[in-house]
Image 1: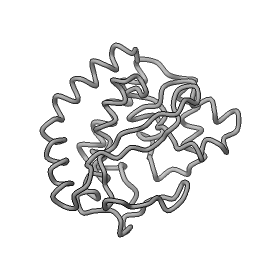
Image 2: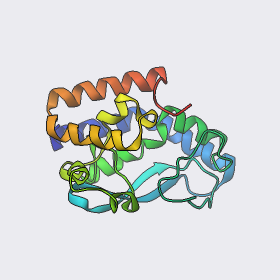
Image 3: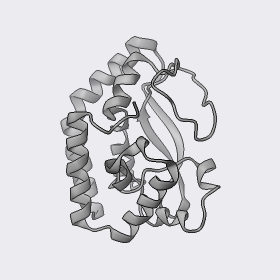
Image 4: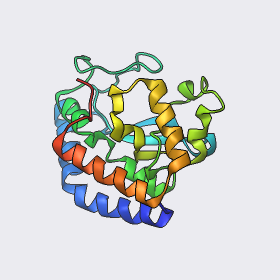
Length: 187
């Protein structure tokens, strides 16, 4: 997808999701105070690090458990609103700002944390040949239900096969998954 389409898509999505985003921010503050936006260092295009923005889904001040640790459904650090935001993937809405900044695209491999990238093979690093995306080929193939290595392989496959038509298919499938709630979060 071209940068112009990414920007137009991000602006449209921000306008359409603004009421939902505002409601989420209010609910996050009501449930536990603290900042509603969470920043985390991720790795993007050509291995460049950036601050990815998300809605905070854990209690204020939660520390990461460890590199690559999956936050399960019963993790006590996840708030009630946070569980809903994660289940629906609405915690990713602030990623639209990253798209406007040029750090992310609407479609591409999901950005990972630097500690994970440090262990990548040269083949796996190919996923950084494109901007990371809010959604991607691996996400619409099963997301967290797919083993990590397979997700990376799907990302490299996307790099090799990317096209405007494939991006459109991924966006449409993402919308369908978000609306139905199927396949978005691990059970």
